[in-house]
Picture 1: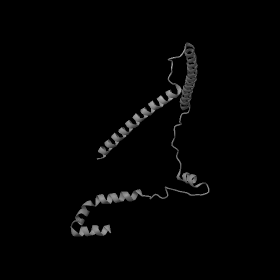
Picture 2: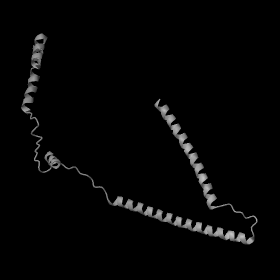
Picture 3: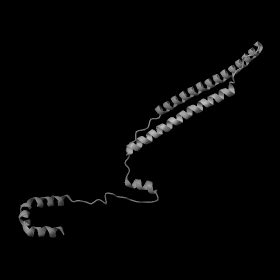
Amino acid sequence: IESLCLCVWQSLMVAKAKDELEQELVDKEAEKERYLAENAPLLQTSGMSLAELQELCRELHVKIDVVDEERYDIEAKVLHNTREIKDLNIKVLDLRGKFKRPTLRRVRVSADAILRSLLGSKHKVSMDLRANLKSVKKEDTEKEKTVEVSDWRKNVEAMSGMEGRKKMFDAAQ
């Protein structure tokens, strides 16, 4: 169901985009026609004398010169801006190469130093983590292992039957 909904949604989005693109093309064409109607009216050359035609040609040449100057100025600005963008990109790349990030190294900090940095120097908190650890004696563990190993046959005979289960139950409590 989700894939069906997704497909329907995508097709609706494509249709909407197609409609907007068509509308945009129509708007551009209308804008072009409006601009040409304002700035380039239709010429009525029929019935004009030679002097009037020459005057019309001079006016058109003046307008063409103005448009060419504007076009040249705009091209010069564009070239200048593209050169400036290229130079800035080169500077950015140079700066990236100059400043290398230092390799981070591991720093050992004690728990007291961390607490001092978090709480400030006024608070004197001592945290000895090793004092809170449980100490285990090595001798006790060795004795328990030897007792278990040597008594396993006797324990099997003693723990068999109901008496043994009662002893195990009492030992657990």
